[in-house]
Amino acid sequence: MSNANHSDTPIEIRPARIEDSKDIADLFNIAYNNSYPIAECTDVNKIEDIIRSKRDIWYVALHDSKVIAGTVGMPNKWNRTYETCRSVTHPDYRGGGIGKIIYKESLNTCYDQEDCDLTFGFPRTFNMYMLMHRNLDNPLLLVGYDGGMHIVEGRREAHLVGITKNPKKDIVRIIPENSDSLYNEFINSNILSKLSFVNQTDKYPEINIVGPHAGYYSKIKNVEIGYSYLPTSRSLQISHAESNRNNVVDALASIEKEIDVDAEYVFSFVLADKTDFIKDMIKNDFQITSYLPAWYYQDKKHYDCFMMVKKLYQENPMMYETQEIIKYFRQNFDEVTKKL
Image 1 (cartoon, rainbow, N blue to C red):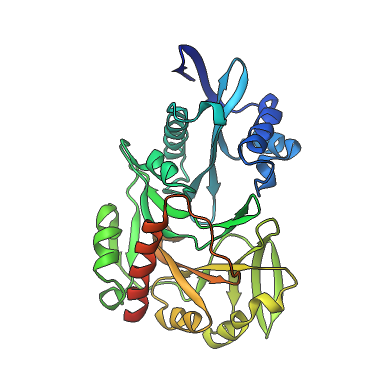
Image 2: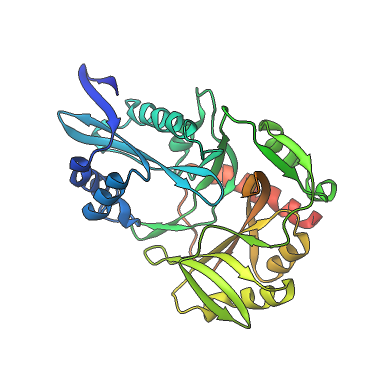
């Protein structure tokens, strides 16, 4: 537990408790005008269940016993990462540094977990990126953007994507055997050179698409596709595709028509050495939006991935002072694509 000062009034910072659940839901509804797309932050019963299970690392800041800020460290068992997410501050308390204090508390607690090798986040605004990057011992390193995963207040938004490596661990990262042709100066100098891994060269697993356990499975063109769907954002993640390369590509070509969901956005994580498969995805309107070092975990080793996105929406997504950063990544990933 720690304390911060806000207008000479002590603010308490501590792990969330079950009795904070209604305050947390109210806070998200106030901050996002009742439009936050993730029910685990706005449904009191769901919040209570999460806090009771101790599944997530959830910190809150309180003023006069009222929750006025919060942030979450959410574990992803499949790749030994923690997402630092769901950061929110009451509008009356913004600009006072509370968000940074609870983010640092949450980040350090994530690093203390045995199953935390990396953390990652999707900063929504430039200010949020600065909160996660500036004046920190382990600043968030930007690796791309998400291409418009979420809808907030009725508008689709494009967020940044960043990671940190747990400074308390030596992490074995496997370099793709085709790295000489895969990496350009942009990936080397802006991403890989800024992270300290135990690098080894070896073969990658045979699979193409990786991801968390799928919520649903469907047979599409004789390919078993595992996917998850977020209806509030009409976003579809393909996390499993069991078949040979050509069959999977055929299935993905019209995935949004084959699965009975109203998807406007489709994404997958693809192992970085699978350049032929990535080129086939690009021919079917997917694009590279992020490069994720050490993203996939298997047998005590980490493997790099690309984040591949297919945009089915027409509008220009909202960006909050991140336009130039996103443009920079988009241009450079276009060059990566040309080199594949």
